[in-house]
Image (tube, rainbow, N blue to C red; front, side, top):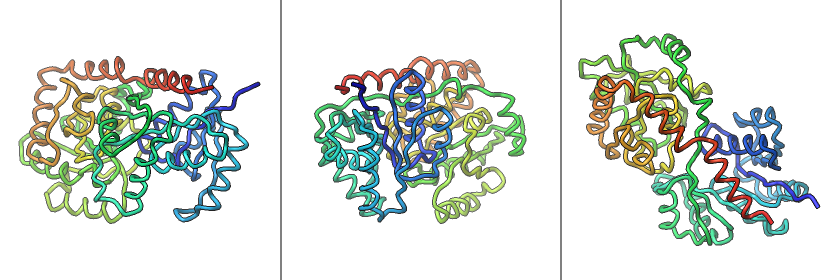
Length: 377
C-alpha cells in the first residue's frame, strides 16, 4: 500500500529566510523522487510560482485574514484528510500549533516542528504574538521532533520551556549554485545605483524589523561617512511604512541622504550581494542562523555581524564579529574588514569555500531527509 506524502506546512511563502528554506527543501526533495506536498494558509507568496514550476504539489487553503479561524481550520482539515500525509513538517510558530491541532483529527501523522529564531525580545511584539509563543513552548511535547536551524535557537527553545522528546540542529542550507559571484551583474547593479567603482559599498539585506536594528547600522554608517574612505551604503528589504519613513528621516538627520540607497524588496538577491564590497548584519536579537550572511559569503562577500545567534560561529575567523547595539564597534568592524580585504584579496574566495564546505543546500537536504525517514512508519 502506497504511503502518503510528507506535508510541508507554512502560512505564506513571503521572502523570509524560513520560507526560502522551505521552498529549497521542497524542490530538492521532489527532484530526488520524494513524495512532498506543500500546504499554505495564504495565497500570493513570492515563491508560489517557483514551486509550481518545479512540479511540487501545492495546496492553498485560502485564509482570508487573522480572524478567519473556524472556516479556515475546517478547510485545512478537509485538505489534509484528502492528502493523507504520513508526516507534517511545519515552519514557524503558528504553523507548528496548527499542525499539532490537525494531527489529532487526521490519524496522528509524525510531526516535525521548526524553530527558526533565537533570543527574540517578546516585549517588542503584540499580545497575540506573545500568546502564540507561550502556547508553542507549552505544547511542544506533542511534536515528535523539533528542528532548530541554529544552536542558539536550540538553546533558546530550551530556555523557553520546550518539552519536546527530541531536538536536532540542522543549519540552513545555501544554494551555492544560485548564490555565487556574479561580477558582471554586480557591476551593472552598481551602475544603476550610481555607485562608482572606487566607492566601498556596504549592504544590509534584512526586512525593516526592530530586531534587525537598522538604527544601529545607520549610526555606524554615519561614523564611517566622516572618514576619507568613499563609503556608500544600501538597505535591501521592506517593512511597515511608518518604520521605513522613520529610518529614512534618521538617515537624513545623520547626513547620509546622499550616501545611502533604499533599494526596497528585490528578488535578484545574488546580484545584490555581487554588487557589494562588504555585507553587514546589525541584528540586536532574534537571529538564529542568518541566511543573509551565508548567502553573501557564498557570493564571495566578507561580512561584519553582531554577536547574535550563530553569527559568530557562521563567520568563524573569516569576518568581524562585534557586540550588538554598539555603533562604534560596528563601524570599526566594517573599517577593519575593509582594511583586511585590501591586505588579503583572497578572502573573497575563502568565505565562499567556507559556505560550500559546511553550509550547502545539499547538506541541509540530506540531514533533513534522514530525520524525516526516521519518523516515517
